[in-house]
Length: 200
Length: 200
Image (cartoon, rainbow over the protein chains, first blue to last red):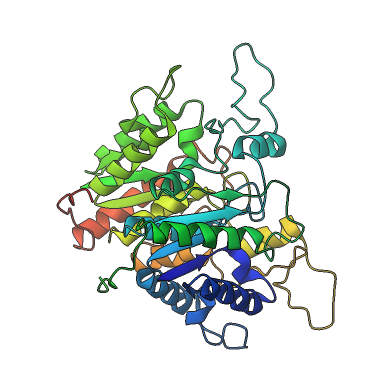
């Protein structure tokens, strides 16, 4: 069974090493890990692949996958990497279940309130209305509801750290816990290997 | 022809008024605008819909749409709203072309460099390696390549402001320019109304 391993760790300087560790852990749980850089043979080299090649390679791996395991740790801000969010939406539309983890505890609401601050107090202004004039969702989710609900619909909720990880894009403790949960879901018949769909 | 109007303006305090203005502009160009809150009759009221209802309503509107017009203006950080990124990925996987606009000029690379800062200078450290130990893409895109390339693949590139908009989530100048571009694409047969797919 093939898992697409989405996440911003592809931007690490040692991204290929993290990918190797993730694939090794997948193998330990009987999965084949598909890591975004797998389809991009020369990303690190001068004259590496262009943006369009990376995009198509990632889409090919997503289409080949039976499920997705996404790192939705907030990336350079209060929310998940938008490239990973795109991939979660892409996979979910194709009917692939999505599991995820975040190496940062807490709710989007609290991160947004801390980062943006409240609106100047006004009579009746709700606590969800922030200084930028926009609300933040108040559903108790770890991030935007489209991401949180896609996981719930997949019956594979997010695993979230109890304490912030020291090295959030290299710490694979929750990644391994998610593999164990996916292994259980596989045993229960909840996720299944699927035939590769034809390219549209 | 139906356009799903993705974007974080749904979080504005006057989100329904912005939705009404967006739908009115769509009608002026011969499109039917599907605004996320359209499927959520009581979002503003106490006891409004739950997170799962909003999610399903948005997916229903996305499935019903012929194309997407997304507001990818950076939202509470250096990148687009992750909920909008999810929706772009979802629609793109279903073969729906995606157009977009951003009311902030500039490249992701420059925003990331300004927000994160460079890594401590090291011999040979590339300029794309930032202080958090992760690289930023260097493709000249306005945001993550998965978003940028989905637009390129849709042959409906992002329209980006020349100067930052004063009120980036209410300014509809570029939204209207995108409608004009979509109207041209429709006239050229590049985007077409499709039958609504059955629910999976």
